[in-house]
Length: 299
Image 1: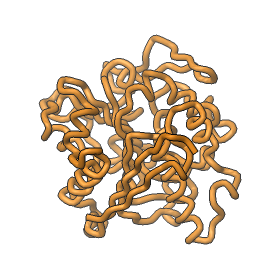
Image 2: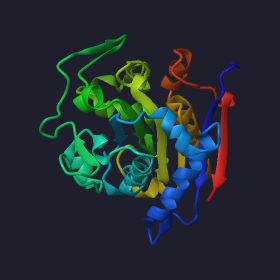
Image 3: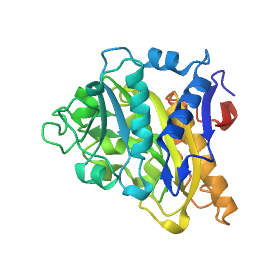
């Protein structure tokens, strides 16, 4: 067992959904409660102040691959953006983004590039695109979205919690496949070692400060596309400063739901996200469940 202990906070609220829609006020309370609990001093605003300096441009990387029913919820993302704005960050210094405008729109986001509001656009938006530089590390050789590489100083990784047929988990590390030009090259062997090697880049993992799972609705099989029979309301958000630890908890949540529904756990199904173990060995985060302080609270 290592000396390092990661902390992951899971926040549940029975009131988050009303007639299937996310309540923004409840979402804000959940996020604030999670940040307070994650903060060593018990004050989430202080934690955000340590993570994000005033004047920085903050990127919020969402996952909108599967459309409105199984993508990062705009209600949660804008609630978090409002919290950042409340502590002094200008709206135009917060960029909500993903790989394509089409996917952002299909998930309920409105593309905005120049108004005095939170910005929201994609790598394929005019003026963005991919870097001219090829970023290399071990198994990785990729162009990276200019949003990630050049436009933001720090990043909040905000995927939705779901199963992935080729990676086991569509989580925090996998979410950065949406930041590169050639993700199709990196799906063999359960995305190992590619996920860890990508996250090891300074321009990727080096910019991340906070990771959050939208687990209001989760999908425990058949992902990454939406399959209704394996999706369900879970009514939580889960957060950590350690993306690897958050993914480990994400796997455990998915496995528990699979067990309840009579499915084999991911490892028994031949889809264990083995790249998380490599990420842990490479010092990118905590990959040992025994070394993670997993706190659950209710609001």
